[in-house]
Image (cartoon, rainbow, N blue to C red):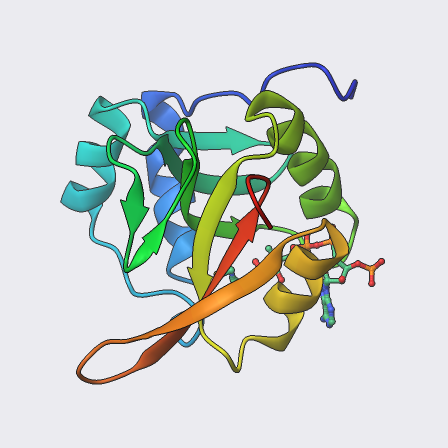
Length: 146
Ligand SMILES: CC(C)(COP(=O)(O)OP(=O)(O)OC[C@H]1O[C@@H](n2cnc3c(N)ncnc32)[C@H](O)[C@@H]1OP(=O)(O)O)[C@@H](O)C(=O)NCCC(=O)NCCS
């Protein structure tokens, strides 16, 4: 797969498998329902390519949680791999960084060691943390002033 091929949006028929891939990781990702996934899909925010499922969108506003972002920053909402440790996510991320000009923000549980290792490998840096009432997330950013 060439680095300059855009990441493919999901097709309708892919949704059941994508749902299963996301919900395979209940301790790393907040569980998602079929109807929530269908809503993201209608907005063209669900990607499925090379065994990686992702929900992402261009940010409509400049702040994410309490962090101010450069314009045209993408929010990576959820990502999960259907085949672990085979290099699929690495390849996917190289293409996504190219597609987004590297301006991406995301949040991750601080205990999610393999995801954090993955993000850091691709140049994401922690810009802060955000405390929800019942849990804390680390906020990572790629591009912009980081
Ligand atoms: C994070 C995730 C998407 C990586 O997908 P993957 O296809 O296994 O990733 P790759 O095989 O391309 O590996 C890429 C890098 O991820 C990290 N990584 C992946 N699996 C890992 C593991 N078991 N332990 C430590 N690091 C790991 C490494 O940095 C790896 O690079 P390396 O092999 O050079 O060390 C996958 O582990 C996943 O789906 N996790 C559950 C869902 C999740 O946590 N999503 C992120 C929520 S914010």
